Image 1 (cartoon, rainbow, N blue to C red):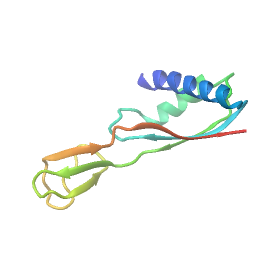
Image 2 (cartoon, rainbow, N blue to C red):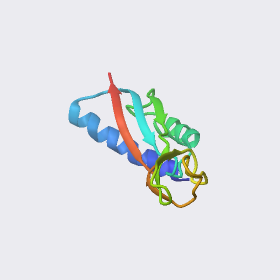
Image 3 (cartoon, rainbow, N blue to C red):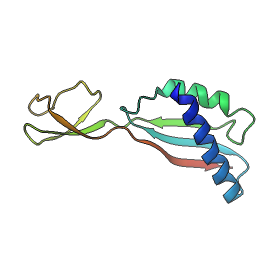
Image 4 (cartoon, helix red, strand yellow):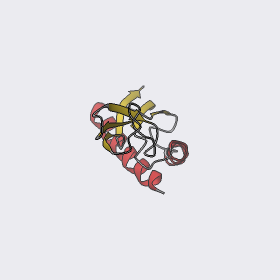
Length: 113
Protein backbone atom coordinates (compact mmCIF):
# COMPACT_ATOMS: atom_id res chain seq x y z
CA UNK A 1 0.00 0.00 0.00
CA UNK A 2 1.66 3.21 -1.23
CA UNK A 3 -0.47 5.31 1.07
CA UNK A 4 1.42 4.13 4.17
CA UNK A 5 4.83 5.12 2.79
CA UNK A 6 3.42 8.46 1.61
CA UNK A 7 2.05 9.10 5.12
CA UNK A 8 5.40 8.22 6.69
CA UNK A 9 7.12 10.73 4.45
CA UNK A 10 4.42 13.36 5.04
CA UNK A 11 4.67 12.99 8.83
CA UNK A 12 8.45 13.38 8.55
CA UNK A 13 8.00 16.62 6.63
CA UNK A 14 5.45 17.88 9.16
CA UNK A 15 7.74 17.06 12.08
CA UNK A 16 10.68 18.83 10.43
CA UNK A 17 8.65 21.95 9.59
CA UNK A 18 7.03 22.04 13.03
CA UNK A 19 10.41 21.94 14.78
CA UNK A 20 11.78 24.61 12.49
CA UNK A 21 8.88 26.96 13.21
CA UNK A 22 8.15 26.13 16.86
CA UNK A 23 4.78 24.52 16.12
CA UNK A 24 3.33 22.16 18.72
CA UNK A 25 0.10 21.10 17.00
CA UNK A 26 -1.03 20.82 13.39
CA UNK A 27 -4.75 21.28 12.89
CA UNK A 28 -5.25 21.09 9.12
CA UNK A 29 -3.45 19.90 6.02
CA UNK A 30 -4.35 20.57 2.42
CA UNK A 31 -2.95 18.10 -0.09
CA UNK A 32 -3.14 17.96 -3.86
CA UNK A 33 -3.24 14.40 -5.17
CA UNK A 34 -3.50 14.06 -8.95
CA UNK A 35 -5.86 11.52 -10.41
CA UNK A 36 -2.93 9.71 -12.06
CA UNK A 37 -0.95 9.42 -8.81
CA UNK A 38 -2.28 5.90 -8.11
CA UNK A 39 -3.23 6.97 -4.58
CA UNK A 40 -6.67 6.34 -3.14
CA UNK A 41 -7.76 9.41 -1.12
CA UNK A 42 -9.85 7.30 1.29
CA UNK A 43 -6.94 4.90 1.91
CA UNK A 44 -4.63 7.89 2.38
CA UNK A 45 -6.99 9.40 4.98
CA UNK A 46 -7.24 6.06 6.78
CA UNK A 47 -3.46 5.60 6.81
CA UNK A 48 -2.89 9.18 7.93
CA UNK A 49 -5.39 8.95 10.79
CA UNK A 50 -3.77 5.71 12.02
CA UNK A 51 -0.18 6.85 11.64
CA UNK A 52 -0.71 10.35 13.06
CA UNK A 53 -1.79 9.00 16.47
CA UNK A 54 0.59 10.28 19.11
CA UNK A 55 2.13 12.90 16.79
CA UNK A 56 1.66 16.66 16.51
CA UNK A 57 -0.73 15.96 13.61
CA UNK A 58 -2.98 13.60 15.57
CA UNK A 59 -6.08 15.82 15.36
CA UNK A 60 -5.33 17.32 11.95
CA UNK A 61 -8.10 17.50 9.38
CA UNK A 62 -6.92 16.24 6.03
CA UNK A 63 -8.26 18.03 2.95
CA UNK A 64 -7.43 16.32 -0.34
CA UNK A 65 -7.96 18.10 -3.64
CA UNK A 66 -7.90 15.98 -6.80
CA UNK A 67 -7.29 18.22 -9.80
CA UNK A 68 -8.30 16.86 -13.20
CA UNK A 69 -5.82 15.34 -15.61
CA UNK A 70 -4.54 17.97 -18.05
CA UNK A 71 -3.80 16.95 -21.62
CA UNK A 72 -3.33 18.27 -25.15
CA UNK A 73 -4.90 16.46 -28.08
CA UNK A 74 -2.35 15.42 -30.71
CA UNK A 75 -5.09 15.38 -33.36
CA UNK A 76 -6.71 18.82 -32.97
CA UNK A 77 -4.30 20.58 -30.57
CA UNK A 78 -7.01 21.37 -28.00
CA UNK A 79 -6.17 21.58 -24.32
CA UNK A 80 -8.51 19.38 -22.35
CA UNK A 81 -9.17 18.19 -18.80
CA UNK A 82 -10.00 14.57 -18.04
CA UNK A 83 -11.32 12.69 -15.04
CA UNK A 84 -9.76 9.42 -16.20
CA UNK A 85 -6.92 8.31 -18.46
CA UNK A 86 -9.52 6.47 -20.57
CA UNK A 87 -11.40 9.60 -21.68
CA UNK A 88 -11.08 11.13 -25.13
CA UNK A 89 -10.51 14.70 -26.28
CA UNK A 90 -13.47 16.90 -25.37
CA UNK A 91 -13.18 18.78 -28.67
CA UNK A 92 -12.73 16.12 -31.35
CA UNK A 93 -13.07 12.77 -29.55
CA UNK A 94 -9.47 11.88 -30.38
CA UNK A 95 -7.61 9.32 -28.33
CA UNK A 96 -4.05 10.51 -28.99
CA UNK A 97 -3.52 12.69 -25.93
CA UNK A 98 -0.32 14.14 -24.54
CA UNK A 99 -0.72 14.06 -20.74
CA UNK A 100 0.63 17.25 -19.13
CA UNK A 101 -0.42 16.84 -15.51
CA UNK A 102 -2.38 14.76 -13.09
CA UNK A 103 0.28 12.84 -11.18
CA UNK A 104 0.95 15.60 -8.62
CA UNK A 105 1.41 14.90 -4.92
CA UNK A 106 1.85 18.16 -3.02
CA UNK A 107 1.43 19.50 0.46
CA UNK A 108 -0.21 22.85 -0.29
CA UNK A 109 -1.05 24.17 3.17
CA UNK A 110 -0.37 23.37 6.79
CA UNK A 111 -2.37 25.05 9.55
CA UNK A 112 -0.92 25.01 13.03
CA UNK A 113 -1.94 26.06 16.50
